[in-house]
Image (cartoon, rainbow, N blue to C red; front, side, top):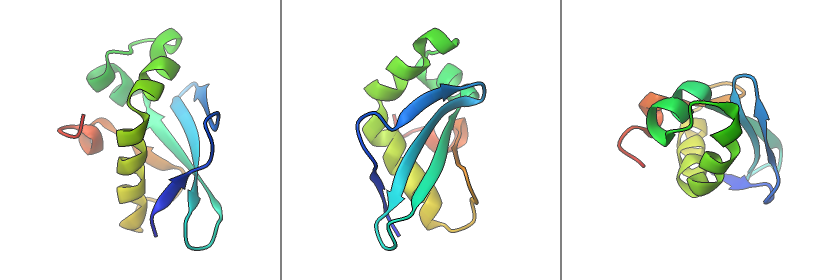
Length: 91
């Protein structure tokens, strides 16, 4: 069940990181995803909220691909958490 991008502006900063929505390509439902603040700091050189959205946009394609892979495992629940461990080696 791959996930698809909802739209260009379907993300926002949250105290926990960057929240972004994606669409389940099979049933069309919206799936909430979270790029964690640890992943932002550890891998994307974005230690504070002022840089989070820019870092997300610069790496969005890969972040969304990782979120889709996590969702496909069907063990993540929601929101799908994209963490340092999942992104490591993919950026």
